[in-house]
Image (cartoon, rainbow, N blue to C red; front, top):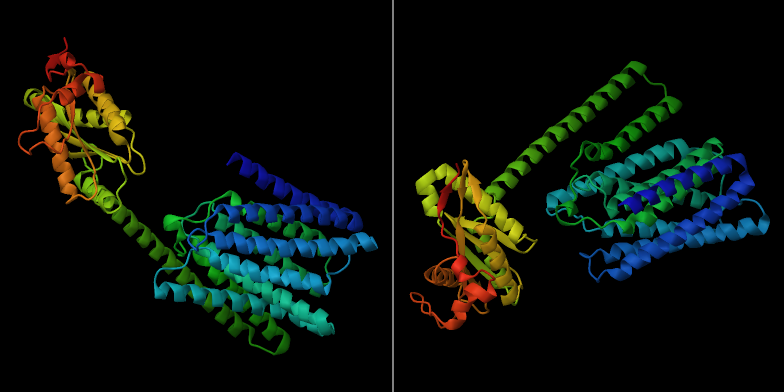
Length: 528
């Protein structure tokens, strides 16, 4: 994160520096801008090619995105190298060659392919049509604005042949790419930095810079300083894109979720309206009052639509929060906030469908909990269960695939994926030791213990309930052995009378590290 922030600052400083230098000296500034641009695009080629090599094939992995961007950056680099050859050969800045035009236009096409390769497509047909229509609105609005204020002026200047063809193709290509970039930025999902943000942001800056070149050329401005700075900033942002991951999980679904994202598709409509007003004013006599009334009406309609979208977004966010809360409550225990029996069953069902060798299921039952409830009351028992839950989480920290859950009452369960017998025993030993430390409850010192039964997830198994029964049988054996110890389920045991063997007896001592004579008594001790 820190390194990326430094790189962002360096790119911004370089863009400003190139702009200032080119303002001060056209020829020297052109040389500096060309050299820095070649370095930046070469860095982009290297970073994007490295990102493509590191990912497996397939749309879901995002490799196609980086392959497209690598090719686009190569085209951009070739175009800059062509301009550099002309610059260093003639000693002053010159226009692009036909070959330079062709590779730059190829970079536009590859940029569109890269952005459309990002796995953010909507899930439903209606949502896909909404995305297409938003793109059409953005493209037509931007093109009409560009045509009215720039291309008509270029046509009036009498340009013909390839010069005029490329002068038309550039803004059209820039408008198409900009429409896609704005679309992805608008519907990029939850706010946050991702490769899509950098990629679409860099492409947006590049397209705006090229459209500025078109408008500036038509108006006769000195466009080169700001153009060089903008293109350098764009190249830097695109080069940084592989430093952050592509959208993943719920961020992959294209859906405008912020006020800015919902407003972006409507900005080209305002540009189209402005172009229409200016064109009408130039070419025909109009009623000013009627024109401004119509403008205010359209503005009010757009404002109302944006307000409706905002209200809808707030409603959707509220429903999503409620859905998340209900889903959390369905799979978590209210008292301890641990996963509950439903979560355990769901996780075991997934493991049964895709088993991981060595997955262990631990079932814990507190020794002496009933005495606490009878002596201090149910409120004290609830406090005790919360403290036990915290100690379990410290003794066996949960991971993305492993959980510590409360099954109900004073029973808990731990799923250790791929842990094996030794790690399961070590975890059970830590749990038993953690529970022997006295707990302060309503100004009294309470000492409880715990017994642990362990079962291994085998394949094939009849069902996940069988695994819990095996762990329960092992837990029963641990309690019969005197509590405060653990037992592994043995297939030879009968469900009602687990075998008592020297091997299982030894688990209470050498394997767990909890000597039999130090088993917790479950007594409640008052404090003076």
